[in-house]
Length: 208
Image (cartoon, helix red, strand yellow):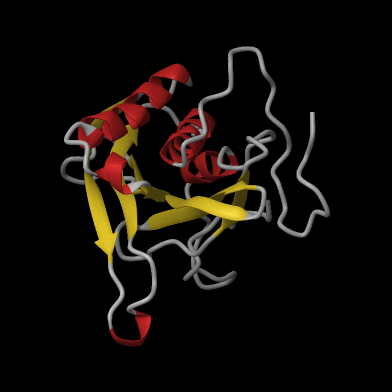
């Protein structure tokens, strides 16, 4: 994974002071030493109007060369906090995954998808507060010169929560597990090690 900027992208040397140390420590923890081999991580631009300081990473979940899910995780930091945050930090997550139509028609999909997030956070010991979000089922149909395109169904989960610690590594791991679950890939059994982040230019996926 490429280096994640330690400062907001609209700040340049010489025109603004360094970001607060707490924010820099949190951003540094977004660089996991290990990640599941199905996941490719990258740094992406962060929104600049939601908080004084922000950073973001993006991810894709692959099985062989098929992209099954995509997501992004945004870290927001405001030394003064914001209404509803319950702290100085806020994490904003997005996950989108293709799903079979019969799965998206299940009325329990929303509660189950939300439980993927909360249970993943608990599994990784990632303390949080003030969590909220939405689960959306989307159906795409083609018309006109796209009338022959197959109907596709997707799950979208948008969530935000306030981490209780500056170390965000557990939250990143939980978000990665959430994407894998949405992609139909079960969590790794306890005691099974993950591997280094996958790069799309690697000749082969990492192997155990």
